Structures are given as C-alpha cells and as structure tokens.
Image 1 (cartoon, helix red, strand yellow):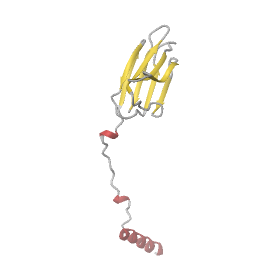
Image 2 (tube, one colour; image 1 turned 60 degrees about the vertical axis):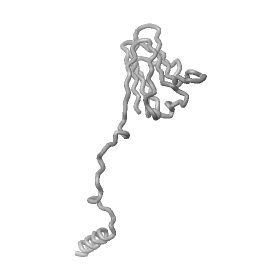
Image 3 (spheres, rainbow, N blue to C red; image 1 turned 135 degrees about the vertical axis):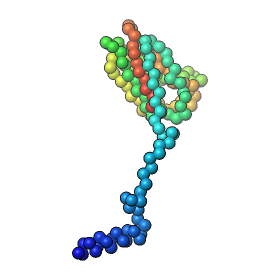
Image 4 (spheres, rainbow, N blue to C red; image 1 turned 120 degrees about the vertical axis):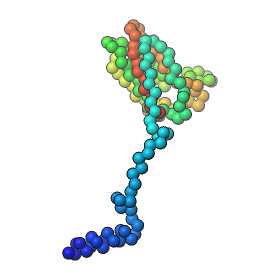
Length: 139
C-alpha cells in the first residue's frame, strides 16, 4: 500500500510541476526541402572532360567516384576547380589511377568551394579501352 501511495504522490507532483511527460511530447515529422539531401549523378564514358557544374551554393557533403568498367580498364582521373584567376585549375585529385571496381570518396573538407572557382571538372584518360566512371555528388 505504501508503494501505491508514493507512486500516486510522485505522479501528482510531476503534474503540478509542469515537467513534460511522454504524453506532452509532440513528434515533428515535417521535412523541409532545404534539409533534404540532394544528389547529382554523372556517368563518364570513355576519355572525357566533364563539367560537373557549380549549381550548388554550399560545399558538397561528399563525392564518390567509382570505376564501373568491365575488365581491367583503369583510367587516370583528375578532379579540379576551374578558376577565373591563375592558377586556372585548382586540383583536388591529379593523375590518380582508379582500378576497375574501385571507388574514391571525398568529404566536405576535400571539396571546399573555391571562391574564385567557376566550376568543378572531371577528366579521365586511359591507355586502351573505354572506361565507365560514375560520379555521385551529395549536396
């Protein structure tokens, strides 16, 4: 009996002190558009110079480059900011060999937007064959 009285007394004190209980908490389930992840994807086939643009206003949170080529095709890749001032190319990756099936992930520290940058570019070169490289940018 003493336990029931103590429990009732404690519950009454909680109600009077306005301490929120689990019933008082409302779940906020609306997702604002600005909080949603945005992903841009590119497929670069063969030797190519591809502009990845600069359509975003903040530094991308990550970028994944994947060699999806069949066989042993291993392109050498460059990823760089085009700039309006010297040096006109500010490299993030330069002459990096990307073996078949391999991926490289860069985070926001690696991808900081260059204030003088006019766009992000990707270039692949290969001795033989036609590489297929996938690029995924998460904003």
